[in-house]
Image (cartoon, rainbow, N blue to C red):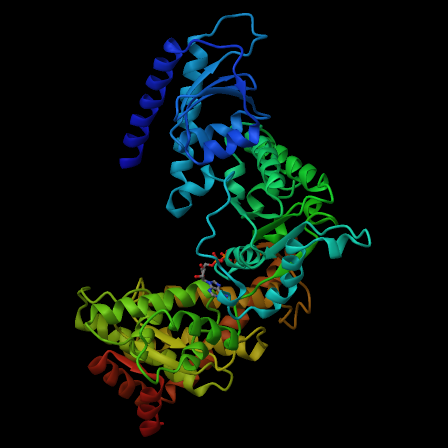
Amino acid sequence: MRYPVRNGCIAIGVLLISFGLYTSYNAENRLFELGYSTFLSQLNSGEIKSVTLTGNKIVALDKYNQEFQTYSPDVTALVPVFIDKKVVMTVRPAPSSSSGPGLSLVLFAGIMGYMIYARSQSKGGGDKMKGKNFMIPTDMSGKVMFSDVAGIDEAKDDLVETVQFLQDSSGFTRLRGKIPTGVLLQGPPGTGKTMLAKAIAGEAGVPFFSLSGSDFVEMYVGVGASRVRALFEEAKKQAPCIIFIDEIDAVGRSRSGSGGGAGGGDEREQTLNALLVEMDGFESDATVIIVAATNRPDVLDKALLRPGRFDRQITILPPDVKGREMILEVYGKHITLAPGVSLQAVAVSTPGFTGAELANLMNEAALLAAHNNKDYVELADIEESKDKILMGAERKGMVINEEEKKTTAYHEAGHAITAMLLPEADPVHKITIIPRGRAMGVTQQIPLDDKHSYSREYLLDRIKILLAGRTAEEIVFNRFTTGASNDLQVATSIATRMVCEWGMSQALGPRAYVAVDMGFLDGQSQRLAQSDDTGRLIDVEINKIIEDCLQEAMIILQGKEAALHSLAQHLLERETMNGDEVSKVLAEVV
Ligand code: ADP
């Protein structure tokens, strides 16, 4: 509720100031004329106190009370900057207009200023300023260099040429080669795309204009397109430089796809067209590189990927084990690590973590160690932080009755014993019956190597382990609880994907019955049209996988009742056990 109140006050402020200046301002026709770029740099450095906008003409008063005039190609695009720099605005009708200066225009300026301000505020977070200041290069005093970006050497290698090109383009154009202007960095969030773009600017020592695709798309049709033009014009003046457009998919979504039509669709289309026109219109002497980032390359308009536009595409995936170790070393240097902490072991136990998650892991561990009054960050702190990130924070205060605790202990013991006994399963890393996040208990398995593909046997074992929690409850208590709902969802989802996506059903053969989006965000798939018979067969096959796995889990656990009782007893006493401790207990009874 705080934001709306604050925005309301600002709206009134903008309106009142507009009224005040409007009545006291006396237009002067023959003023000193200042170049538009000089005006922009004065504006950016906060030297402009007030402006009166008349069509394309801007009459400005600077902090030395000097008045001058200049002409802007697009005054609307400057409104957010005026607001950001607290420049008092007055709007007058263009000279061609027959009516005199009307109150409605002043009101319009106030309301529009307010709406743009409120919108940029509502984007929230650390990006607040980014939306408004996109005409001003990011302050690169704390430069990011390639050496700060760890573990993604292939991507860096691909960009060395871009850096050389920014530093000196003559070698590239000597033989009349056309300058490559667009680089598209594609990969999941947090893999270091923004950091890499900054590092290109850092290495080349050039200005870095940064904005997000969503900054372009305002509620007014035409604002985004004019922003694109204004930004490119400014960038060309400051060339060589980099324009970084984060979340390019916000503006560059396929025009044939969803979201067309009125309002936002029109605005996005106009903005995208403006971007394409600007990219095509580069003169060969303007060394401006546009680096764009996205985690949805699959939805981008094909026109963006055509030669001459974003024709250099670099995919950045979460780092492999070596890459993770290198990133952990970078962040290990920022904190006080206890002697002998093996970051290699941490790297092994964090498959799938992105650079951002690893940075977060080390930071959380340092905070935890400080909270516990330690002098060093120990491996245990990193482990605890990892569990918090992976499984949610411990809910120590949650009151659980003994009966529930016992059920959870047997449920988790069922998962763990099955995982220990199946050949394709990942090793058990930890079991806990302390509630974490939304789970009452967790059995954590961590693969020995980074996995990029899964065999049918591995997936079947995974389903058996998932179903074994509920099976253990059934064997011991002869009843089920609701505690297995997430296990059932995951198991059914794997079985469905085996049949419909990975061609792992013998009856249906190697066919795909779903369309899966090829972006980097998981889980978006849609069933394709199919005949009723095929639909029925798909259901039969999914049921068969689940039933077979359930039976096998039952056979495994019925033979291991002593192990179930023993492990559940240990869990009830200790609440959390690691993989080695589980192995030891099972070695005694199995
Ligand atoms: P993206 O743009 O891909 O979403 P960012 O570049 O914004 O990711 O990364 C977020 C943060 O994660 C960075 O500021 C940095 O602290 C950390 N990070 C990500 N990847 C790396 C990496 N390869 N090396 C070092 N730090 C990284």
